[in-house]
Length: 341
Image (cartoon, rainbow, N blue to C red; front, side, top):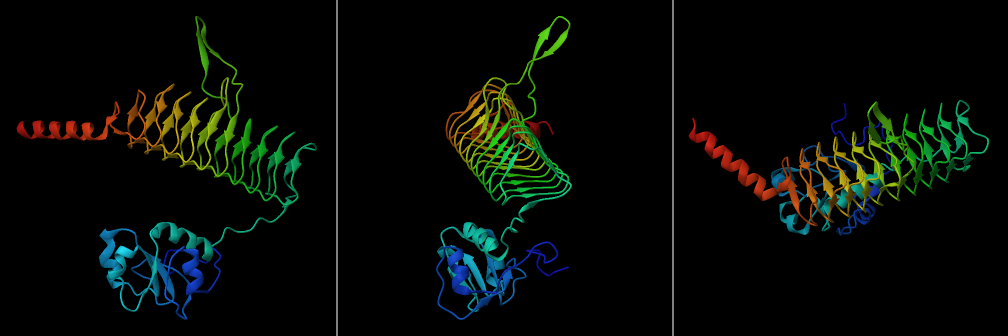
């Protein structure tokens, strides 16, 4: 195995080496004008003189002080901890800089235009010539796929689905009743646009209600592996621009997410709930239906949300309540338990 776990050559192609100035520019940072070539990236603990690393957590200051990295991306407040032999690339957003440098050394593999011979494409489907369609894909009637897309092996693009430019659809993903904007990433195994969980209760049992809405994924949305997004029942299910859904997330019918929402793994949002912009939902949290979660609210991991959450409020626990209140109650219970010992 490589000494550094970043960018193993078996799986990730690498560009470079790059001059220090190019790396600093990619990081949106400032660095001295030195004749230094950077060959790759590595963690602080194992980086060598020709590699770049980064730090944005003061708790790891000891690792920074001992690093042998040729350059390190750091906040100006941490520059004093950088060893004399290491070049500082100064930026107020080290993690963002690190992400840009990672893209410099390990860019996304280019699309290879063309349709694999084993793919099944309906005669009236519109696939841009610059798009890559992988083995065993199915693209049904009336589907439209824009330029620069990659459709992974065994993916199914249903009738009438529209996919914007530069999208990535992972292996075995399925899309139906869906409209995708530009630069949408759907990871392997995701299920988008299937019938939602809607039914009427009758004397003889459950009567499934037709689900007549769509799923709209706006620009720059990411949908994690094995995540499911139900289509709307009477209106659309909408995932707002720039939002990111982790693996194994469940989004019910008619749910509307605003811009740049984050939904962490195994969270579930019941039908017709609305999340305004910049809401964060922790792992395994569950949100009841027909709720409104205000802009910038934060839902803690494993929280059970049963009522509306105002903008900017952070909640935890089940039933969910303001975070400070929840931990105050936990502390009180712990004190009572100790008294019984």
